[in-house]
Image (cartoon, rainbow, N blue to C red):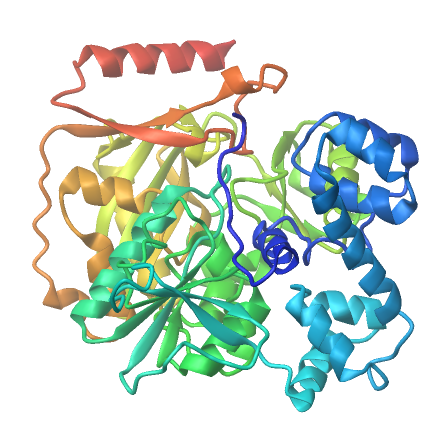
Amino acid sequence: MKSVGEVMGIGRSFQEALQKACQSLEIGRNGLGADGREVTDQNKLLYSLGNPSWDRLFHIYDAIKLGIPFKTIKEKTKIDDWFLRQIEDLIKLERVIEKYRIDTLPKDLMFEAKQKGYADRQIAHLLKCLESEVYTKRNEMGVRRVYKLVDTCAAEFEAQTPYYYSTFEYENESVVTPKKKVVVLGSGPNRIGQGIEFDYSCVHGVLAAKECGYETIMINCNPETVSTDFDTADKLYFEPVFWEHIYDIIQHEKPVGVIVQLGGQTALKLAQKLDRYGIKIMGTSFNALDLAEDRGRFSNMLKSLNIPYPKFGVVESAEQALELAKDLGYPLLVRPSYVLGGQKMKIVINNEDLEHHVVDILNEMPENQILLDHFLTGAIEAEADAICDGKDVYIIGIMQHIEPAGIHSGDSYAVLPPYNLGDLVMHQIEEITNKIAVALETVGLINIQFAIKDDKVYVIEANPRASRTVPFIAKAYQEPYVNYAAKVMLGEKKVKDFKFNPVKKGYAIKVPVFSYEKFPDVNKELGPEMKSTGEAIRFIDSLRDSYFQKIYSERNLYLSK
């Protein structure tokens, strides 16, 4: 096995379930096909068919569409004819739809496409129009999503814990109650950069909302998680964390608001659309979330607060990057905007490396803004997690990385509490954390990452959401911090209402887990792009512990090489 996560799609047909599963993957695809990203290189497709990879399913679609014979596809993939014919049927439907415009498409074709799992975006691509036009048209036609119940008791007696999936038929089995409701967006599939720690946060958020008297609605598509246990939330929609599905559920259930802070970057990325459509975001506002993500605005805020940060700039081309590099100076940390797990992040040391990496990013992520930061060589890295109610701040934990800055926080050994930062640095971290949390008008959780050089603390970035370290700190200190933060997000509690009593005995070490044995050809060098697939926790009584001494010396020896 080489995968690090999975998704599940549920539908009334294989085709609908398949399209939903593809929409859940979060790889920039709108489903299987109908998005203009088909591969047309026959040799590349033939190689992919015979050599299984993560995208082979998409290449099977591309091969059928290109006209490669079924016999060849079957011989190379060993996939049964039935499945191949199901995919071929989707392509035939697309060719019929392409003959129409949005104003001439018959209702029966719209209905068939939706029954077969096509997203509005895919239909819009086929009709050469906007997604919003497809949404409006299908609603005018009366082609609307309904919800079917998955009976967890096999009809032997009435299920107390059913869950739901959407489809396009006429009977709706999801009964809406008059209770006040809150939707919690899940974290989607586990993958490098975003794992089970966000599921932990979602589950504890659901439990906190229940305690506050809300009917809780969970939306997620990951069958491995506790959040998709049908007895965690009051109502589970096993659906892609994909805008169209989420919006229809919100229209159906009419919740008080939506919690986006607990599902990692997956949920956070949907905040803009929620805000645009006038849907209440519980906790930190979209403007504050966007301010933290927008490096230009965020750095201006830091400047106004007199908080140090590395020199930076934003570019949109390799030419701009080379020009900016003259001012910033090497080494530079180069990264795209709005990504998770340090995706495509790299430290570059000369013009050649910079140009190559910027072109590489823009080729994979067209129109993405690229951030260039002057990299602080030899700095110590630390991070703080806190709960804020917009006014008061409580720092739940500060962790010091054993490796110097430049290694992704997910790949670092980290120690709670810090082991040698000193009072001056700790005071700066605490003061800066309070300033940023309040300035961003944070309501809920916030994580801030720091680089420390010559006893001066620089801010690398701030994320006003649950971070991967929050569950670690909660377990180490035996405090339900996510429960507290969720109640703050819901407006039910203030920070001063809680009696924090963390168990602080010795140290807790975050130990990253790597899967290099599964990927022998992968570059094992650590850097700003995350490579670990999990983590463990280890408790020690003192810094004299042999385990700490061993990893401390090993990591520093590794880095010196």
